[in-house]
Length: 211
Image: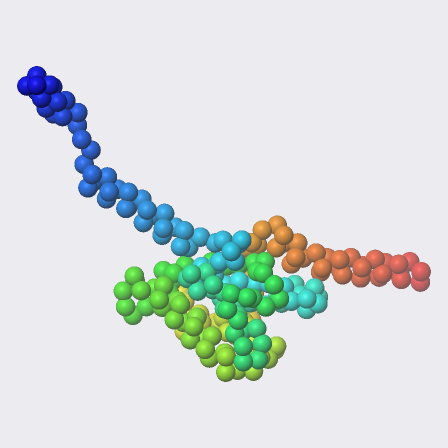
């Protein structure tokens, strides 16, 4: 009995044991890292675009003018808010279909009087304030529209220390800098315009050949 006890004690001394607290700390650190990354990850299947401006074509209008479309802005949880009609701001149900283009903005460029840890709250609050305001407004295609709603949110949060965003600047920003969500988004954006342009070109050529 004493020999067996001695062997057991020796084995316990020889085999090093892993520090459980250190292992737990490392695991928590890894989990936090993965969690932070996934928070900002775009998920097209679930239609989640964290702190993004999103854009989708408007039938007929975008077919004729590809730089014109419907725009929305997403909270940091990825849920899209868009000024979809008179006195109505949609939530998680974007008008005219799923986004085809997006711009994911940098939260570090959000102006905040408080701690940098509060930037997500500043973004979300600005989006909700703009949405609440546009629930009181009549939709005007030329003067006060979905782009204006997004512009108000960006101006409210002072994104990139700018307070002069408007429908024109946002339209061109998205047109020249926006990314396509996938190849299908590219096709949805351009195929109708290219078909119409091809028809116009063919008709023009035929008419000229006949004259």
